[in-house]
Length: 308
Image 1 (spheres, rainbow, N blue to C red):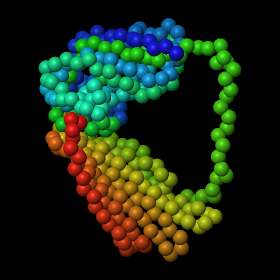
Image 2: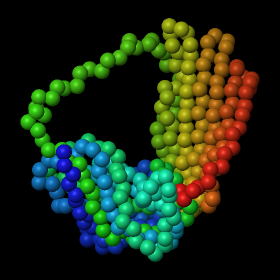
Image 3: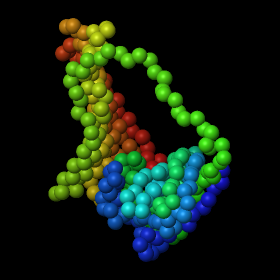
Image 4: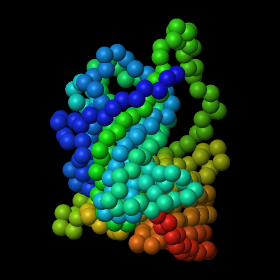
């Protein structure tokens, strides 16, 4: 195993000292897209490369405005036809550049050398493909945005890949066997559940919402014990373009069981918002037996931002 460093080259002739202004990323959609900075690495690999381990991105950044900021880095595999696949990514709160235990405010107008560890990867890069690094100062909804719009300038950088060279014993590696599992329960589907992801844009207000309807199986009956079970879960991530303090997450989940004329269900509703000083989280739990609510409780918490 060895680590290979690749220098970052501006894609399509972009200047290296390119400004990064705040964008709000939702899935593969950025608002605005101009806030993304893409860097290509090389003109295409001449042979297949295998990477196994934790890559590291190193960059020289200059902060213009605020005392706290984050940087999001995505490493992508770019095919010869221009399509791209996400390989790994990493986030760094720049106030944690030295230590996660002792955060330090940033100084506007000062440059910093930062090290951004990326998630562990195991990936083969075919010959003719290129690596691409995407850098941005936000990555919503993966990371909560900084309290004020951030302006960064990226001067230089490189990415260090833990490469694994081919070995003669690779040809003798056994194939994965069939997974072991218990016998399947006999289940009858009673009703489906909403599922999928959707993106809503309000053109007049600038509000962008991403809705996750998690597929939890809907309502189903376990035949052997004559028990009906149901689960639903929805999360909505919303933000107004240009206003990081408008970020909000709303969550609702319901889980129920029924047999004969007896039924029960529990519901959880939660929301998270923020201001300049703190995060605010409110959660409500309700429990019902048949149609009567038998328990309810609400929790409200305030967490200092502490340079987040």
